[in-house]
Length: 98
Image (cartoon, rainbow, N blue to C red; front, side, top):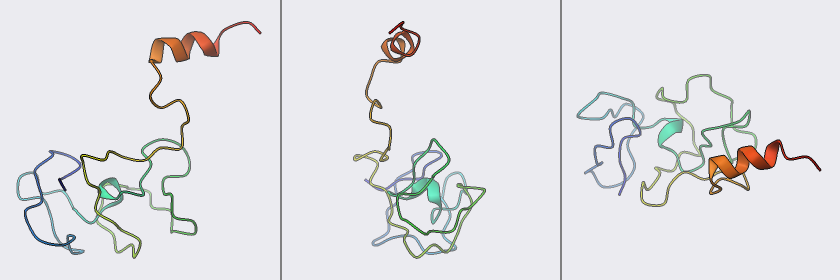
């Protein structure tokens, strides 16, 4: 299901949103990094596509040619190998003596 990154309102139209499409409920831009399947929410590198222009506001609408509307059921990709790890276990591992 394709949905707004802010309020999770489903995208009912066929195909991806255009550059000027906004969410019917909250008004956020839909053609934005935060709604793209290549977007990474943490870290310095925010896009999995090499050479894409770095944008300061990942929620703002843009005209990125690599945009691919994220399917909320698939989730956002991550470069963190320990993304599914329990935070408490990760914290203890971080400060564990070698």
